[in-house]
Image: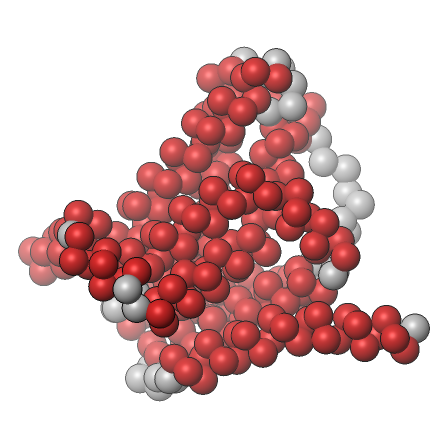
Length: 243
C-alpha cells in the first residue's frame, strides 16, 4: 500500500515540476504525441460536443456559455485525477491488460454492435426542465463520462503525465471552440469516425502486447497511426474518383 501511495504522489508531483513540464514541451517527439492526442480527442468528441450543446440549449443564451465553461472544469479535474492515478496503475500488467481489453471492446463494439444513428434521443426533453446548476452538474457528469474513453486511449499512447494532460486539456478546449468544424470534417469525410476506432484498436493491441512484455518502438507505432489517419483522406478521394 505504501508503495502505491508513494508512486501516485510521485506522479502528481510531476504536475508541479517546471522541469518535468519543460522536458515535455522541449521535445519534438512529445509535441507530436500531444498533437496526436488532440486529434484523437477531436475525432472521439465531436458528437459529444454536440450532445453538450443540446443539454444547455434550454437555458437563456447568456447562461449557456457559462454552463459549458463550468463543465470544462469537471473535465480538467477528472483528467488530473485519472492521469495521476492511471499512469501509475497502468504499470501493473493485469490492469494494463484490462484497459487494453476495454479499448479493444470499444473498437469491436463500434464495428460489430453499432446501433442505428437514427434512434430517437430523449436527451433534450430530459434536460429541458433543469435549472442552471442542475444543468451544470449534468454537463459535468457527461464530461466525465466522455473523458473516460479518451483518457484510457491516451494512456495507451504515452505514460508521461504532462504529455497526457496537455493533450487532454488542449483537446477539450479545442472541442469547445471548434466542435462544429470537426462535425463538418466528419460529415465531409465520414471515414474519420471509423478511423478513430481503428486507432483505438491499434492502441489497445499495443497496450495488450506491452502487458505481456512485447514492446513496439515509438517510430513504428506513431508511423502506423499517421499512415492510418491520412489513408482515410486518400481512400475517400480514390472512391470519389471511382464513383
